[in-house]
Length: 210
Image (cartoon, rainbow, N blue to C red):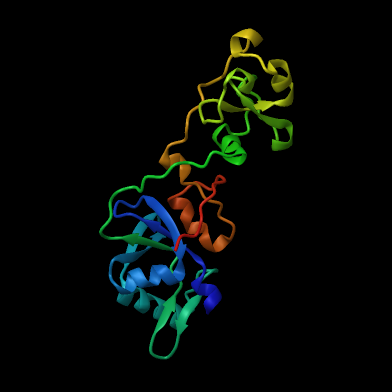
């Protein structure tokens, strides 16, 4: 039971936009308090359930063995049956929380799609470096606008020179990813597959927030 309660649940705002990932335990509290509802995607349509209607559906699943491959029961008694929710929608929040994207190597590779920003070719991570557009020796800082993905050859050619000195150009101007691009999670288990209707499966660091 404790393990199931620590599973992850995707949280949507009132407009069905992803805003967080929480534990099943925390999601259940919101459902019990009627500040959130459970969302499923059935035949490409959103279906919404409160505690009572979800319990009723859970009972039918058990009675008629109408199981999804990854359905798990939190409560399974003669009185009530309750399947683990995977997505909830908060009913009183329509904003997107302000967040910044963590500046690190993996997120720069993700932003640039593992593509050298000088020659435009895509490479495996082992063949890439992070380059300072304005070299550190000339005052260049670690920032989204000054760090780009580069292949080993382009990195060596540019060295500690400016773009003008190296006679090189960027294929696009680097910038900080916005929030919508930032909310990308790794769907590590097929039981979270319904999340794909709301988030990208490209790598993103998102913590389980309590």
